[in-house]
Image (cartoon, rainbow, N blue to C red; front, side, top):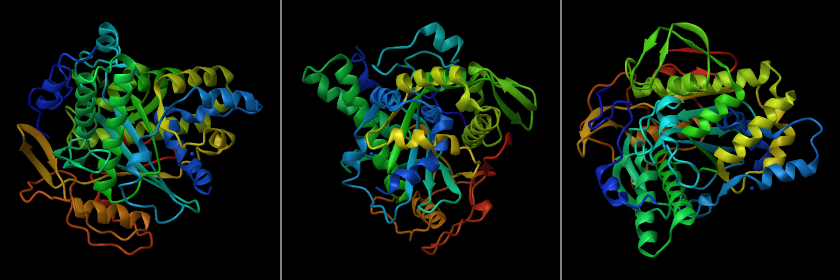
Amino acid sequence: MREEQGQDQYGSEPTSRAARRRAEGRRAKSGRTSRMVIGARIVAGLASTAVLAASGVSWAAYHWISSGLNTSGALNKVGQHGPKSLDNSVNLLLIGLDSRKDMNGNDLSKQFVQDQLHAGSSQIGYYNTNTLILMHIPANGGKVTAFSIPRDDYVQTLNGDGSPQGQFKIKEAYANAYTATHDKLYTKGVRSAELESQSREAGREATLATVQNFLGISIDHFAEVNLLGFYDIAKALGPIQVCLKHPVHDKYSGADFPGGLQSLDPKQALAFVRQRHGLDSGDLDRTHRQQAFLASVTHKLKTEGIFSDLGKLQGLYGVVKKDLVIDNKFDVIDFAQQATNLTSGNVVFHTLPITGFATRNKEDVNLVDPDKIKSMVQGAIGQDASPSPTSEPDATPGPAKGSSGSAGKTPSSPSSPPESAFAGDSVEEGGIPCVN
């Protein structure tokens, strides 16, 4: 994959120039709940909500935990404009934010960002989404199917009310909405934590609306975590074992690992999931790293009895409360009561395909076929695929590694696309998978 223009020495992408200009100077809960629990194993992997369970913990403790969480009402608006659920299955979106700021918008320590996150400065990354993973949890149990959306996919992005932003990388939907809302509120005199909170909420709404439109399915729940949250999770759980097919050395992400099985500390774990330079399929391979990391975390939760380790649980409680944002309909207590059953390894991860690469707005992007994506995703989860009125596939794709030919519409019963239809090999839970 080609390098993005304007990239800094740490390999982090700049936000859109327009967003930067606008932002500069202004930095100052039924039937679904039980099924949703099945899929929360991935939230456990990404954001450690599985730590909300411990045998013998009182109801008062559960209440304390749930009352201290950061919750968002972003789905309340988005649900009014997006596709409707067709059954009692649950679609859960995991959002990894590329922000080097805390929950209140304050810059993280420069030294911490450089030395531990190896992520340049707090001015880089802005509010783009580095990770987007949509998990489908079947209504009657069975295998959970997860889809990673490459962050540079060039798509129609939307605001939370369904209005179009334009054609952008899918990762920029959050940043675009954040910036527009930030500017508007700033002129009205809103400042500090309230300014940051409302601006981020607009970003979440835009991301949810954009993903719903791109995949043609509803989103029922979501969880968001940033770079600091990922680091804190890895620190509380660590060390995490991963497996590489080949040795890697990348000065941008800080990834420097031999081939084979190895244990990673928090700094190394972040480098592992952030690397794209030096990988044959670049960003597409990075999605496989993220999937493999989640599989390794759930394997660790299952095999090492972390749910019975009070010390680790206490550490993870703090991470969840400090770094995680979930939707306000997420039933934490119901999840907590069943969390020890969440690591069965019954999840398969796919990376959605692209059709090629191109330059748009002076930035390198992934070209995609929105109708094909809808057909693949909806077919895999047992829904009829139908194009969205805002689908605008690019007419000039180029060759791309890991991409495939067009997939036709699928029947309403689940029928997973062939493995070759996705970008690269899929990753399954149940152990420590080896990846590039």
